[in-house]
Image (cartoon, protein in one colour):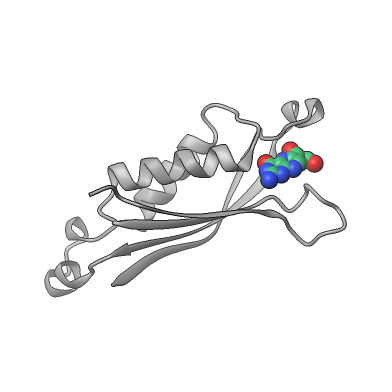
Length: 118
Ligand SMILES: Nc1nc2c(c(=O)[nH]1)N=C([C@H](O)[C@@H](O)CO)CN2
């Protein structure tokens, strides 16, 4: 199976468990991989038959900045459900990194893989 991917998509948003985190935006970085079949897009050179990474990126930014949640887990589950419902992919892997969360670490985060129900 083929993949369309997005690497290090940067989103500034309100997210976090603690009160101080609800007052100012923090940076998140998303890596997203989506399984798909690229053969129709490649054969026709038609963006309408492609899994459009720009549209996925827009949707991820829109949702991530719409309504604050506390946990990265909540956000990636919501995003996986949206991507599987709205885009032509059978499986999505989302890794979200929150580099400012633990000063002693380069970055921290959560990664999930979810499949479309049959
Ligand atoms: N597994 C998780 N652990 C933690 C999260 C999270 O979203 N998932 N969040 C926090 C705080 O919001 C942190 O980012 C600020 O120090 C702590 N642990």
